Amino acid sequence: MFTGGLNPKEALGPQEAAARKAVELDDSLPMGHLSLGAALFFQWKWAAADEELARAIELDPTCAEAWHFRAKTRAALGRSEEAIEFQKKAMELDPFSRPFGLAYTYIDVRQYDAAIKDARMRLETQPKEVSLVWTLCEAYRRKGDLKEAAEEWEKGLLLSEENGNSISAATVRRAYARGGYRAVLLEQAKYLKEISATKYVSPVDMALQYAQLGDKEKTLALLEDAYRERSPLLVWIETDPAYDFLRSDERFRSLIKRVGLPPIS
Image 1 (tube, rainbow, N blue to C red):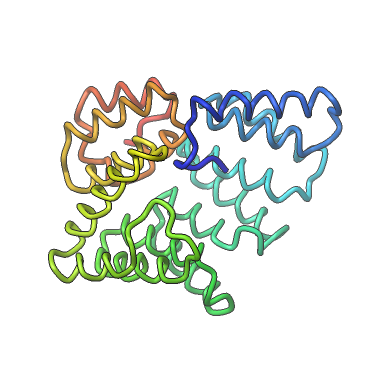
Image 2 (image 1 turned 180 degrees about the vertical axis):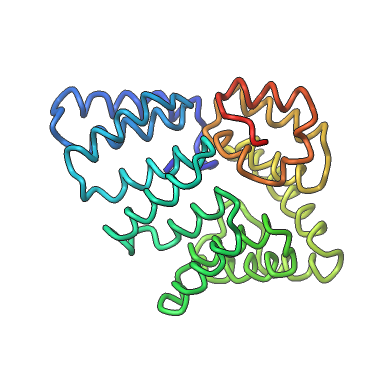
């Protein structure tokens, strides 16, 4: 899956080209269609992406990753029931490669209690699975349980071999003790700005910090930067409640329309 660590100007074109070449060489292989569907999804080409993913499943109905990506397309487009149905199918076929899959689908469709329940259930048998800890952190954050979110954030950093684009566990702990979740967000924003001098950082990753801080102008400016570089992470701004305070702003509504997402009522 595409993440905020890759520059879309450098990655999206080659990703699609490689997938198209794979399909051209052998149209009967489901993984080529899966790869092309994923590439098109991250370029906001919803119908074409779904066609390729459906073809992958037609060729191999047991392809869990294709079901997973179809769930993602449905979640992004606000089709919650289908998203959950498709992700459950993916989990039935392969419960181990993406143990967080169903919980994160619940997050994407804003069913946070269901996400927390599923993640905690799976953590009982996989207590060191860091992806489940990050999923819990995200579920608590979006639900508004910020103390629990900070605790899971710290746990996730402690379990991770690499922190990636994040502050340290000790910094999270000290910042929360000093000024609550807002202080943690400020530390994260500071850290992202520092590392952006030497490596790519998605404007969406930055925008999320300022959205949670309630800074409308910085958030919108960063989201526009993300649009200009065609960031795949814009796929998820409609599902994240951090951006709900922007819904009355015409600039945000325009952005949603340009990306091709259906507005959430």
